[in-house]
Each structure stands twice: as C-alpha cells, then as structure tokens.
Length: 166
Image (cartoon, rainbow, N blue to C red; front, top):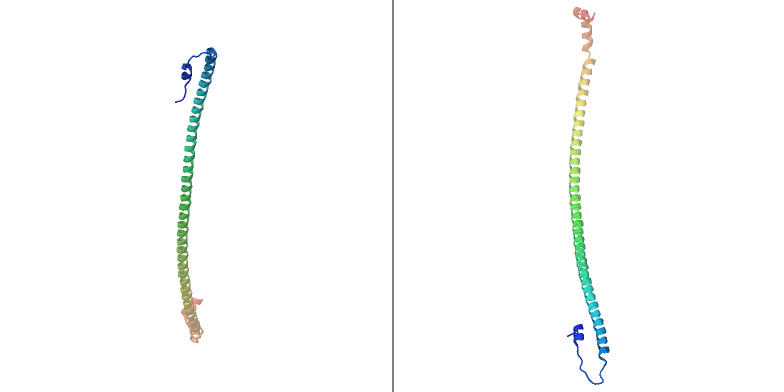
C-alpha cells in the first residue's frame, strides 16, 4: 500500500541518546510532505489529462470508424448506382435497337408496297395508253376510209345541211 502524506506526518520515531535533532527532522518531514503532496496532485492532474485525452482519442477513433464505414457504404452505393446505370443504359440501347429494327422493317414494307403500287400504276398506264392508241388508230382509220368522201358530197346536196352550214 502506497505511503500517504498523512502517514509521513504521523510517523513517530523512537528516541535515543545521540539521536537526530528533532526540529531538523520535523522540518525535513514537512518538506517531504509538501513535495509528496505536490507529486500526488501532479500525478492526479496527469491522470485526469490522460483520461481526457483517452476520451478524445476514443471519440476520434469512433469518428474515424464511422467515416470509414460511411466511405465504404458510399463506395458500395456508387458502385450500385454505376451498375444500375449501366444496366439501364443497356436496356435503353436494346429498346432503341428494337425500335430501329421495327422502323426499318416498317419502312421496307411500305417501300415494297409503294414499289408494287408504282409497278401496278405503270402497268395500268401502259394498258390505258395501248387502249387509247387503239381507239385513236381505229378512229383515224374510220376517218381515212373512203366512205367520208361520199358523205361529204351528199351533205352538200342536203338542203338542211346547207342551212346548217350557212
């Protein structure tokens, strides 16, 4: 058990002949008591400072651990966001490719239909032209026949026609 200032103060020494000067011993003991009390106070202060520093260290250690965990969570969240963004981008690209394919296929089908319609219209125009040519040729042939000359001469003899001409 450690010695206390009170133990030093209450210490009694036995007396002998030719012993130490009692006043000198008491003064020395008083000085030892003061120094010992000072050391005890200083030790207490140091212990209190050490406890305060230990508390601060623990506090900063907790902050460091929290920050570490926060950084890890933030990194995981960032990785997850990046991964989700990549997946979403891939889905958007696939959807766009599907739409593009559909649009191209629709356009090709419409182009084929228009081509077929154009071909059909060309055929119909060709048929119409051939029929019209045949009709015009038939009419021209009728006009070039000899029978028109006799009609023309008969018309000049017809009095009604004369009236109409005249």
